[in-house]
Structures are given as C-alpha cells and as structure tokens.
Image (cartoon, rainbow, N blue to C red):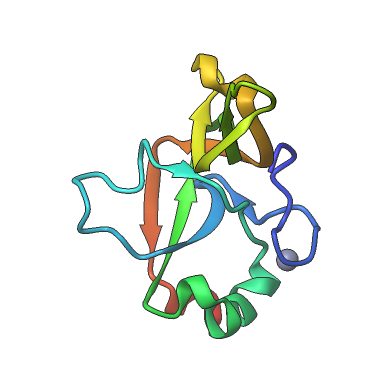
Length: 129
Ligand SMILES: [Zn+2]
C-alpha cells in the first residue's frame, strides 16, 4: 500500500495521467463524488490483474468499480483494536483508526489505510477487453 504496488502480483499498480487504478466494491451510490474521501484498505491493481480480480475476488462479487485516483494519502491503519485493561490489553474489535487518533497506539495493525482523493470512475469493460 505504501508503494502503490498491485495487491495481486506485487508489481507497480497501473498509473496514467488520470491516476492510479483501484478496483473497489461498487458503492458509488453511497455519497456524491464516491470514492473521494473513502478510506481504502486494499491496495491498487495493475492492468494485468484486473480480469482475474473481477472474476475471483470475493469482495468484488457483488459489483466492482474501476477507479483512477489522482491523489491519495496514507492516513492510518486497519487492524485489531485494544484498550487498556487491568492486567493486559483488552480486545475491542477490528477497526480503521487514523494516525491522529490517540487509539492508534492500541491497534495491532494489519494494513495501511489510504484516503482516496480526486477520482474518476472508469468503465470496467474498457480494462477487461
Ligand atoms: Zn498485478
């Protein structure tokens, strides 16, 4: 995630003048301008891995959106959140916690979180044909 490598093959993610390519579960009806301001926990992808991702990724089975993201910033972590306990840390749950949240020191981080900025939705069929 920090180097914007493809989440499938580890090569550099596809990048054009419109931005870095992300495949996301399609929630474009969630808010105007989606996915801008979205906290992404999955890294981008390369062109070669688009077809296999759409076909086999369980997270994309209910619909995928291809998005070119012009800017994004690592803003936090995703993982197991704990709180102080009487003898040892007590698990609270799985959460996304920004770096400026004091709870971040209680997260056993599993993934980096990137906030997506200005984005353009790309017709998926232009990438898979
Ligand atoms: Zn790839």
